[in-house]
Amino acid sequence: MRTWRFRAALLLVAVGLLAGSLYGGASKDTLDVSLRSRVETRQGSGRFRVVRQEAEWQASKTAIIICDMWNEHWCKGATSRVSELAGPINEAVSKARDKGVLIIHAPSGTIGHYDGHPARKRAQSAPKTETPKEISKWCTIKAELEKRFEYPIDQSDGGCDCRPQCKQRTAWTSQIDSIEIKDEDAISDSGVEIWSLLEQRGIDNVILMGVHTNMCVMGRPFGLRNMARYGKNVVLARDLTDTMYNSRKRPFVNHFTGTDLIVEHIEKFICPTITSTALTGKPRFDFKNDKRLKVVFISAESEYGAVESLPVFAHELETNYGLRCEILQGTNTKARPGRHEISGMEALINADLAVVFVRRRAFPADQMKYLRDFLARGKPLIGLRTACHAFDAKGDGPKDHVEWPKFDPEVLGGNYHGHHGRGPKTTVVLAKTVEAHPILAGVQTPFTSAAPLYEVRPLTKATQALLIGSIPGQEAEPVAWTNRYKKSRVFFSSLGSVDDFNNPQFRRMLINAVFWAMDKPLPKAK
Image 1 (cartoon, rainbow, N blue to C red):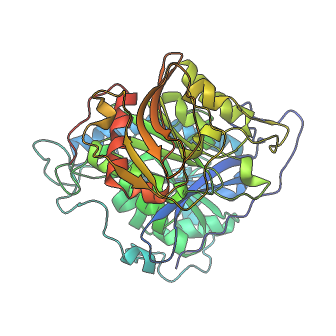
Image 2: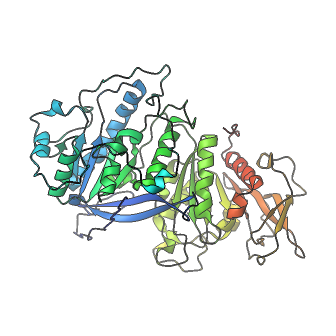
Image 3: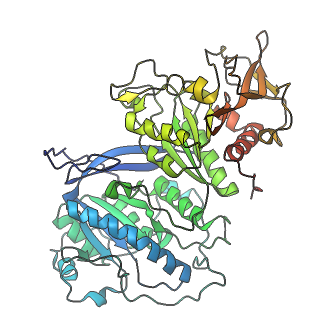
């Protein structure tokens, strides 16, 4: 059974020792980490919500383990990706080392190459401590929750994605040279040695990076599973890793989507993940051949189940349509003080689309700037349900947070001023003036929605109504429309409850809207 012990270190304040990071202000000997995990929404539901936890780790109580970044792999594609990954890993560990983080190089099976190296001697000379019973062995043990779910990718053929496939052989002799090994580091592939090093230094926090996530990173004696089950605060650096996955195997997705599916698996069943931003202060690393369009979901509401529905929808976009999805999850409760907090909005820097499902939040000023800058660049946006009052917090936010009360009329083109009571179902039909529109392709009307009908009339002049909703005894209201905000394509729908996401007509419309907003043709679903 996994144990996560996220213990925030004491804040060490020293004048002049503040790091000038773009994304944070950690002091010289601390790391600000945003831990992302996934938790089952209800026991037995099979649905998982994204959870983020902010923590401050003391650098001297933290170690990085670099797993199997060999100089050569039997698969040429893997060798190429390792070579590309090595530079960003070297930069991350260099900055972490400067802060006082212990760097452990673990190029399994090549440790003899480093006989006599000071870093090798350091691992060998660590006083042997009482070690967990099976820390010397590979770990394939699954937690009870993990056993209920199918492994996300097929790796039965070794995972080579090359055409033709490479022949399996032992090709590695050392760690790749572009990752520097300093004398003050450690070199070991032994679970016992590495555990002893961690215990000797009182290290509770462990960051794994390297390859391959679905094999060695999870299963080695020093890997994620063992570190998690024996009580370390272990995380995967999810952008500094790769998988051995053949995209011609189940689930027949892009190679990098295969990696993302493994990351999701880890976040659900083994441990949280972070990005290299926590170490470098820069945007996360992306492989040059990862050409997928990127959709960032900004989720923070407590009324309509976005925390449950958006991960399922994002998974559909990833596996069926080849998109890359990132979910930024704020709190889904009404409670303060955390109600107005969110992190990770820097993901919008290289995003192709933002989807906003937020209700009455005042986000930190630096986080909101990413959204304003995103729209200023003419990037597209989709708003769902409560997005029409997403950033109108009625003055409830902290002083250093900002609102955008006119987000609805300015960006979405709406005029939200309340909603009808719960009870009567909304009947949704085509707007009378709408002609054939790509967002409505394949959408069969009428259909119904159980969520209360929003009062939004009149819309701004630049909008085009697509769908109209009505309930008995009341004026009909637009429930889906398009708009232009400066150069940005915008789509909004006041639908978006969990029940709506279960309706294939709503999902068809929303999938169409995703590609319309990005001005891209809709690919055939897998």
